[in-house]
Length: 477
Image (tube, rainbow, N blue to C red; front, top):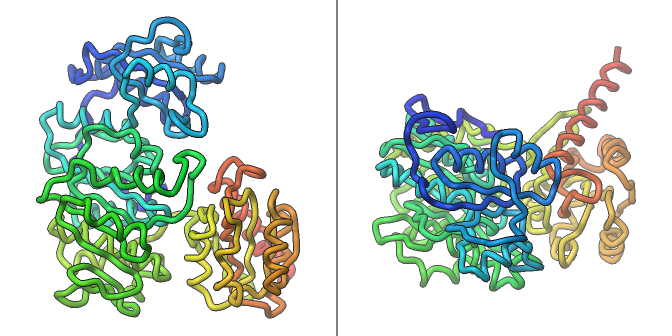
């Protein structure tokens, strides 16, 4: 859910399927593999834009859905492979850990494998529009920063569309005129499949270990992320985080006008947080105490990135300060979902790795911590500097025993609850017993052992907290 309207009223939609004569892909043979929530609408729109389109999904239900809307469906691992491009769902690998059979055929045939944002860019330019493209990436914070930039632009009356990895998908966005801006969250999976798109503003927040099975190594992961700066010109903007070494190392290869950012320290010529004050060389931009949805140094860095983009877009410092203060935040990212007996319950389910959980733990002096699920490489050992902040840990999911062993080695009080339904009341009881005034769900693990995704995990946490609050009210009555 985007925390403000998806587009200003001036946004124009050019030819959703069946409308108008806009056919930027007429005569092009495009294959689409992966017909899920984003893939099927993307295939429909490309067909509506004139592409000679063939679709495929390994799931029978998805293939049937495509046939119902009139798309040509064929097993692309069989027969001739004569296409101009393959649009491959981001979650389907084309290299590591093992390429999908259709991706392997595309590579053998020399057919480019592209992300949907590439087709949006080409369509916008084919429409004669000079609309600006803003791309945001990083291991952590990219969703918040993407939504925040859009919030600032929209609040200042700019024509803006927001989506990409954050949602909605790129090919679900309107075609904007030259006054418009696309603000797009870009995952590493998407960035390794771009070819011509140029971001007028490109943001790299941070790099820490993630998706190594897909990219093979940290070097491969960092290289995919660095594609955010590909094809930029000197008049474009490059925003680069200064709070980790891998991001800093990207600076020499960036050709655009570079603005360094930090949530922790002064960076010459950049934007940084000094205590609670966001500032640049010209002085104060905003006091982040007025922005309750942006706690912690990591969100200070997100705010610095958004401010850099907004200043280049011509927003005033007053508009930026007002936008930061009014930003409502995103679900599952340090989202305060309730208060019970003086204890605040925080839903940070989006923290699917240790680095992201570290950012949440650093935001509170003392917590009862709910963690667990499918651990990433290295588990939670890297969180040891934050263990003194944990009054008690309540562990869930497949790798709870492994996390328990790490906590035991460091003398952190903990228990294995198993499921979130058991963990929430246990954590609430510990907190209300005086352990801490915050119950923090920041799992440091993926959710797929027990949930369909981090959002389902966070939604369940919210329901469980609301149930506790309802029960408490019932007892008080």
